[in-house]
Image (tube, rainbow over all chains, first blue to last red; front, side, top):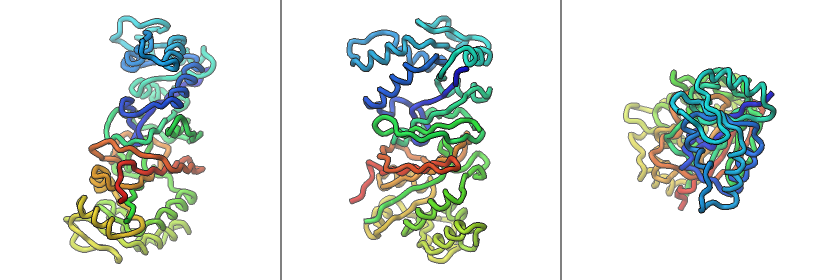
Length: 176
Length: 187
C-alpha cells in the first residue's frame, strides 16, 4: 500500500510560482533524493509539460542536473489529461477514471507516490486520496500567484517541521 | 530607531479570516496564548487600522475566561496605541491616539523618533509599509487548516525577501515562524 503525498515549494503566503523562488544546491539535492525514492508520480497536464524539460539532456547541465534527470526518467509516471494525445517515455496517459487509477496505484505500489500540481491535487483532495501534505516554505512573500491549496480543506494534523535545504522550512500535515 | 513588526495568525493558504469574515478556525490554546502574550509584551506601540482596532477594542473591558486571556488583556490595556482612521471620531479606549492617516513618510518619522518595537495591524496598513521597505520583522502563526478565501495577510504589490530567525511548533499543530525582512530599513 503506497502513501500519496502532495509537496511543493511555495512562498509564505502559499503560492507555488517556482520561478520566484531559488533552489540552492542543498535543496536541489533534497529533491534528487526525493525523486529517487518515489515509487511513482501522478501529474496533471501542466506540471507534466513543465517537467518534460528533464526528458532530454542539455549541454549546460551540471552533474547534479544530470543526476536529477536520470532519477526523473526512471520514475514511473501517470499523466492525467483529457487533452494530451500522447506522453513521453516511462509515462502512462490517464484520460478516464482518475479515482480508480489512483486507488489502483495506492493499492498496487509500495512506498511513496507523489502528485503534482495544485489542480490535480485539489481533485484528489476532494476524493480523500491524499495522505500527506508537505509545504516547503521559502523565505519570500509574493502577494499573488497560483495557490498550493486549490480550495478549503478540513483541519489537518501537524506531523513535523523540518529545516530543508539552505533556508526552507517544511511543514508536514496529514488529514485528521 | 524603532523596529516595525508585522505579526498575524493565518490559515496555511495565507488568510487572516475566511470568506465569511470568520476566524472560528483559529487555534489559540493556552500554549499559543502564552507565546502571543510574550509577543504582546515586546510591543511598545501598537498601530491599528480601523477594522483591526474595532476587532481588538473588546480587550479593554474583557476580563478573559482563562489566566492567559486575562494576562493578554492586561498587556493590551497597558500598550500605547495609534489608530489610523478617517471615519472614527474619537478613540474607544484609553492610551489611544487617533490619526486620520499614517503614511509611509509619517511611519518613517515615527520609527526615527521612537525606540523599541512598533507592531502594525492589520494587512491593509502593513502592505503599504512592506512595499516601502519599512517593516523589519514578520511573525506568522500558521493554523493547520486551508480556508480557500478570505482576507490575505500579505497584500503587497512587490515580492518581499526574508531571512528566517526561529520556528516554534506548538502541540496543537499551530506553528510560529519569525523572519527578518531583508529589504527593510533599520537605519
